[in-house]
Image (tube, rainbow, N blue to C red; front, top):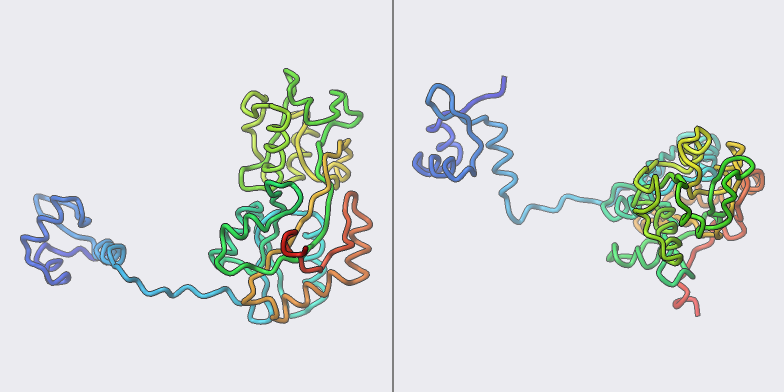
Length: 305
């Protein structure tokens, strides 16, 4: 059982007068409980209260290091990325790569907060000509290294045979069409909302717009299970489930890498893998990928000219 302090004991613990203790309780500032007319103070809550009210708290945060063996990735999920991390773990014994599917923006936030070494992202910029830099500049004081992983086709997943005759984003205007969506943290959702806006379509008017799933393959499963007619995702998801696919655009999928770990062995091993024949063979076996720039450091359009 957690230790309970009396009023006298908590006053001694905090080095204040007992009257001040009662004042803090009255102001609902100090955690306390009243039992049989007597105030008692759970020690662990008092300690937490002290910590929460500490100013000039020392910054103990450090960049997450790979220790030459571990890579933590977070961000957008991708079928080729999953296969590549599996290949990495098979190829480099004693090394480990792990991934958290939190969406592109979630990955950028994780990298900013030192929760991962690499963020996978495909956030389209306002100019629609570039990816990720606009968002990274808004989040980081020190820009990460941006390395291309692949280009891939984004489009509309529809039922086999396309019974609803869906040809483009403009078809979302049609009444009765059921969609499945991705979460706000994803690059796919950002792209869809941008395309809907171009067509003058209010997403909230579409049946299923608020029905969100975590992965591209989940979009396909909703359509395959007849819980939706259409959803945005990558071509390989449609191909894997035997669905039809209506392409919308090619997009760039990048790896944003912390400069603190860029030259560490595990990270360099992963980047080296992107130049391997095995990686390219895997990409060629999957629908909708272009890895001609894989492993290349990207620069913002204005910087490259």
